[in-house]
Every structure is written in C-alpha cells, then in structure tokens.
Amino acid sequence: MRMFGRRNITFILGVALALVLLVVILIVVFSGGGPATQPKAAIATYANDPTAQATLLIDGPEGAGSNHNQIQIIITNSTSTINIIQGYNDNIIKSKTYPNSEAGFHVFLRSLEYSEFDIGNNDPKLSQASGYCPLGNRYIFSFNADNTLIQRYWITSCAGDPHTFDGNLDLTVTLFQNQIEDFNSITAGLNIAS
Image 1 (cartoon, rainbow, N blue to C red):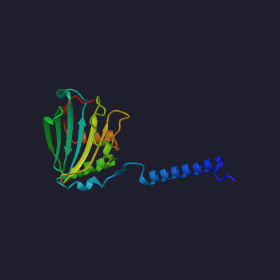
Image 2 (tube, rainbow, N blue to C red):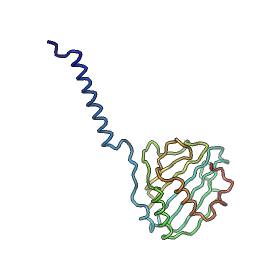
Image 3 (cartoon, rainbow, N blue to C red):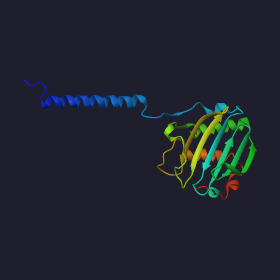
Image 4 (cartoon, one colour):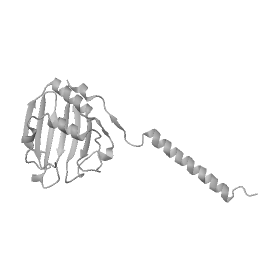
C-alpha cells in the first residue's frame, strides 16, 4: 500500500499553500497593509504657542536657477509671511510680513483641520518631493512647534504621482493664500505652474 500517492501529495501541497496564503492575508490585515495614514493631534491646540508655524511651500517647475521659483507662506500666531524664492539655494528675492493674532491663527488652524491638512502618509520612502512632477508644482505642507517638526506632507500637480498629503489640496492652498492680503500682486509673473 502506497502512503504518499500522487493524489495525497497534491492534496498536502494544496493545504500547505492555502495555509501560507491565510497567514499572509492575516499579516496584511492586522499590520494595516502599509504605512499608517491617520490624523494627528488637533493642530488648533497650538494657536497660543508662539513657536508654532504652519507652512506651505509651492515649488514651481524645474528649470535653470534663474527661472525656478518657489512661494513660501509661513503663518504663526503673530505674523503671516510670504517669501518669494529664486533658484535652488533658498535665495529670497522678495519677502513681506503682515500682522496676525492668536484668534486669527486659531481660526486658520481650525480651517486647516477641516481641509484635512493634518492627514497624510508617513512612509519614509516618500519623504522627499524633489524630482516628481518636473513641469508642474510640488506643494509641501509642514507644521512645526518648539523647533520640532510635527508633520510634513507633499503632493504634486501631476496626476498619478506618488504623494504623502491626503487632504483637500485646493482648499488648503487657498487657505494659505488667503492669509496674504496681496498674494496675487506679489506672485504675478513668477514661473509657477497654474
């Protein structure tokens, strides 16, 4: 009598394969399937922290240093600042600062929460946006307090590119731009993709 006939071996291999697949599925389900995408602690709680700042950096299309522009908007509980940067070496060619208040900063931070500014993917393999969407814009959102980076997410204007920002791009960018009274006149003529 043959104990390990062809049918028995096929059956045993099938059961072993099914068990391996079951274990893989359980690992994926219980490990979350990859880097977590979850909201952070409420950023509006930082409204009275003088070290807290929310920042948007719009990194324009790649090109020669003299043709490459970035727009940086930094909002704190006392100021709203816009910096126009030329080239790749953080050369600020224009800067303007406006007064802000704790109450105004609180409303701004609450609005950012509703735009899901604080939701993104912390995958270390996607920590840098440089090189993606070379003919479009890269939008880099960050939040700092007490000299500590609390969050940093990015997304591009090119469909299909990887990204880490999972919030509402249009609303979030508009909220930052609205903090600068004469945003359109300051940024007129810059090489930033529309």
